[in-house]
Length: 80
Image (tube, rainbow, N blue to C red; front, side, top):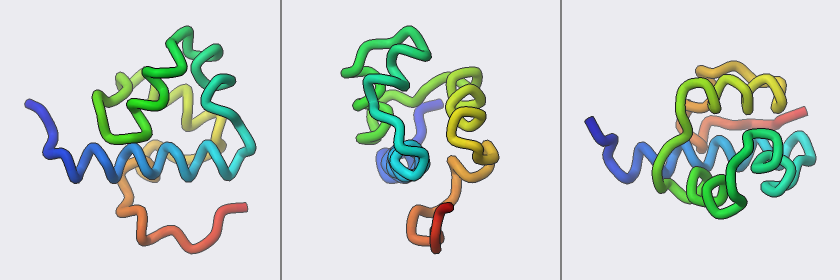
């Protein structure tokens, strides 16, 4: 089942927020996951989603919970 575009965009925006909060570049994430820069960029812009394993890895790098990936982006207050 394919998720609606607005849901994919929310997930992508959360991945972007979390990555930026940790000071990582898309290139660093792409290298770490063995993916192209374009693929990581697509994740953050609501394109195809990363696999569950890729989400878990990113969350470990970002020091975040997997559930944070699925939050509404407007619910973020501050990230430390």
